[in-house]
Amino acid sequence: MHPQDEQQNREPAADAPASAGGAGAEARGGSGAESGADDGRPGGGRPGGGESAFTVVVAAVANFGIALAKAVAGVISGSSAMLSEAGHSVADTVTELLLLTALRRSEKPADEDHPLGYGPARYIWALLASVATFVGGGVFALYDGVHALTHGKEPGDPLVSYLVLAVAFLLEAYSLRTGLKQAAGEAKDRRIPVRRYLRLTPDTAVKAVVMEDSAALTGLVLAALGLLGGQLTGSGVWDGIASCLIGLLLVYVAWVLGRSNSEFLIGRALPRAKREAVRRELLAVGPVEDVLELTTLVQGPTEVLIAAKIDFRDEATAAEVEAACEEAESRLRALLPSIRRVYLDPTPRAG
Image 1 (cartoon, one colour):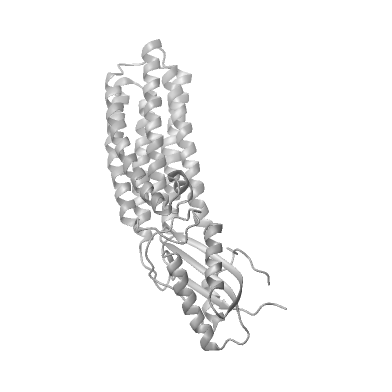
Image 2 (image 1 turned 30 degrees about the vertical axis):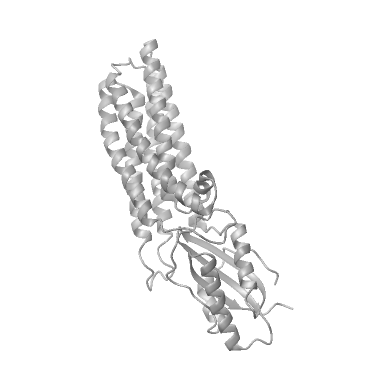
């Protein structure tokens, strides 16, 4: 058998301990956070669960208040863009509630029926949150914008809408600042750009808050431009165009977040640089001759599973193999604190 980077279609936990004949090592209860970003560093990170929850709560409270204000302003002014923004904020509020559910469910400890824990549950609920953004925000805004363009609508008094947009901008900016502050701290720990961290992080709750708040600020600017265009020209076309652009923006955000969460639900490995670092640590253990097969699986921001088929020296005794497995476990957890489980299967090289 030749060495392979990974095979995600196996179930390493099911056969590793039995195949090892008592030499399989399982690491439980690790700590720290692993971004999954390919920064080339062996380890680092910090707990982020509580900080992520605070970020989501701030966003949820801000979006709920903004949604009510936008809805009132939209009814008073008759602005399609304002009503689209109200739908946007309602969708964001639902999204934050789903993200809070995701964080809470994923923190449940492993049990007999779920021996690998509940880490991936966060991605199921986060995926549902992206669907809420798509349907409740994007589709509604597109429908309202098309309706305004095809049926026509006389613009009303935009004063209230301008005031609401200004207040909403401040609240959304504060919420975005909270999310970016957390993301910047995590990115600094890993010495990588914030943009790269957001693209690769398994903490999709923070990614969702940052993307949705960024989209919200952009949507507020579009709504203001739509109101201004209607005020200057007396035509409701600008308002409808702004509503359609807001809808397209939300559809894009929902697609990006949905794709990100689906990757982790399918099963995402550690970045190549960190897989190679894991392989080097295993090869550094005395009795290890070769790493025939290496599988890594990110189960959450602070949960990584490692499974490997190891070719030990033929003259190694059972006691030496057991000691080598213990040493390998210790080295890997020192390398990446987020490694929770390690399964090593002593396997002779074919041929």
